[in-house]
Image (cartoon, rainbow, N blue to C red; front, side):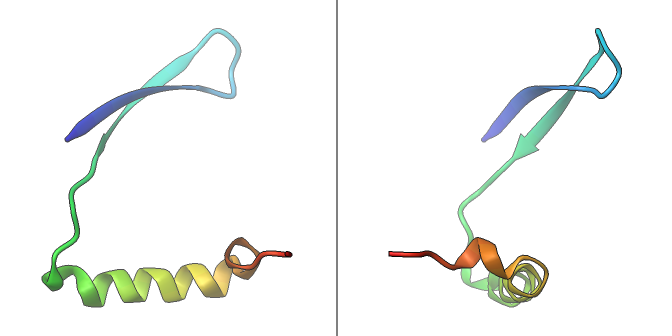
Length: 52
């Protein structure tokens, strides 16, 4: 599935379009996904915590 999203640019009165593709992960994606998540945990640990 693809989604086209329009985002504002920093310059006034301008914007750009981005096409985002996504799909369900499969077992062959496991290694790449794990590496991506480990990087995310390292760079942004606060995004993966919560206060109750």
